[in-house]
Image (cartoon, rainbow, N blue to C red; front, side, top):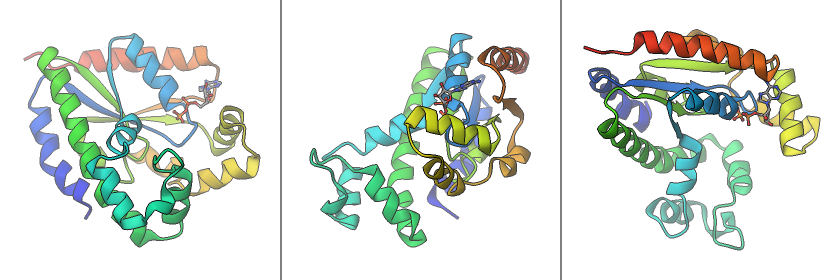
Length: 222
Ligand code: ADP
């Protein structure tokens, strides 16, 4: 069991005893997580983007950066001493032991930072609906620490097309990235809400409206 699973086990109950709603938003790369997160934010949700936190804790000179460089060597750094995610990704993609090591360095730090943000929002708004955008929510076991899971769904073909357009990469590159992830269909059983984002932005917005109404109904008030 990963360190994160252990951390999150006791936390779910603790947070659910508060008035806040703690939601994990996930989906494959290019499925539309960021787009959907913005729509929820417009309606009043607080968003915590875990990718942003991961970048933050890995800033040059920090504890996490030091430990990564100590383990993987300086060849994973770019010319500005920042961690080159393409290079590091290439290393751990082929070596599960190294991936586990990387996760054991990064995940606890990200989780601590997430917790700090979560508590900070809670101290300002005790009835906050907090939606954390966590790409690997299910893979790393974080779904055990949230009250509800929202899955943004698009089929692999649509995902690939959107990644190609957004990142300007080839179809093969987009498919490679998709194939390295847990298939989105396997995530459906973990979800409390599935937002199908294959249609137009307007269609997605109306699904978000429906889900938001459900979340407001679930808001704990006593
Ligand atoms: P993720 O955060 O899951 O990686 P994004 O929200 O960045 O995905 O969406 C991937 C790309 O697809 C972006 O360029 C976004 O503008 C586009 N996109 C998202 N939803 C739709 C939609 N319903 N129709 C068309 N394009 C979309």
